Image (cartoon, rainbow over all chains, first blue to last red; front, side, top):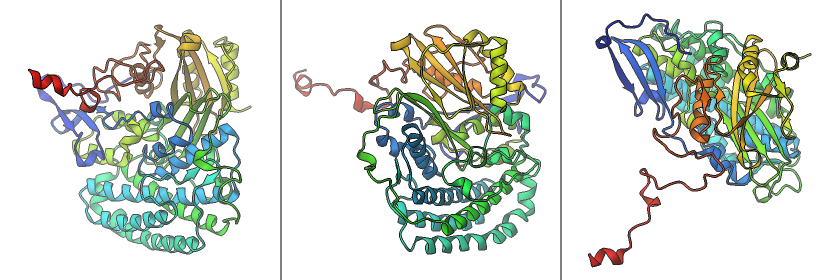
Length: 378
Length: 169
């Protein structure tokens, strides 16, 4: 229930409604925020969503499990590879399909690169929201390098379709580890630059510290997950809580910050990229030889008929806990597929977090949430 | 005993859970229970007070087989993997109690079920369209919904007028 933290305005003529979006650079996609303002103070926020609804869940009921692959990476186009792999893993679990060791590790490598690319885009776009144009150039330089690397394996730069039931469609070539390590070395050299350019910047600190503080109670009420939650001091990460794929083999930390403000969300994401680098390095060292796709699995063409049942499968996307619910009635198509996307809850929570702030802060707070509208609208 | 099993046992003891109306296994959860709509709010309040967060809600069309919807709620914890599924059989045209007063996020999930299935939620503060355009008068996730109606947003769905007639007038 909505409870205003601010005293309601006594004079209705004193308040006005400002539409932020749906075509506004800082809403990152087609999102409209109906802001009720008193002067520059936000009294109420009503997110209006659904502009990019494409009925992914209806589509899932009308095509085979394999035919749904192209839809997966179009939910969250910034970490699409993670969603693509998640669909494969969910159906593998439901249908009992074995995955070769090499494919499991390769999925981790590609997913973590995708996570870094997603966070890098966020760094650039978020700093742009705050009026800093330079970091964008740095982060996009690195992101471009990663996308180039992923392209050599998957053939795609954004909407990946490389996962298959039982592995991946293409193997990592012999030169991949060398190229991957070169990218990691470039990233490692970048962190000190970010530190000097962004964290040490007095304007950035003034704009972000103590702004948009989200309490643990708010996280609970809205089901917030991902970097947003970890910046509020909760070490919850699906990769640790419910280990899947090859993640249990690699050691990594869950970065948290106690402050719960916009600055903490920035620091958590930077630390997460560093942890992803750690994971990728271990995975490259431990990359097993062998097939990339289960023998006898003919990928897309095979018509699967998983047994009847309802499955909940969760992975950690770049934005938080992504859940796939598949209801199977034993047919070749899912009876129902539901996608619990992290941005959905994270955006909904903004209704509470933004209330009482200034308009300029609202832009910073929304930016710090790293919402991707297509995964909310589905 | 894990937190999910603990909570499920408490719901059982309180008599808020019911026998499964049909055999359909639930995978990927620590515990799964069927709950009557009348006891849903109490059960979910118990989950909240025990430290669970509202993870997801899935509405499933079972109208043909069962004349009802199936709602699958999942709750989880931040401190341990403890996914609890509460499943509710919701007969058609009977509103389900809203959980918006227990978990804020439930309001959005219920708006979605309402617009996509036409399922009502009693006590919802603002039951209106979330993802579909306002005033959409069809429920696209129903199994009975198979073709989009002619859309004001897409001319290609309206068949063009026969050209022969146009010349005669």
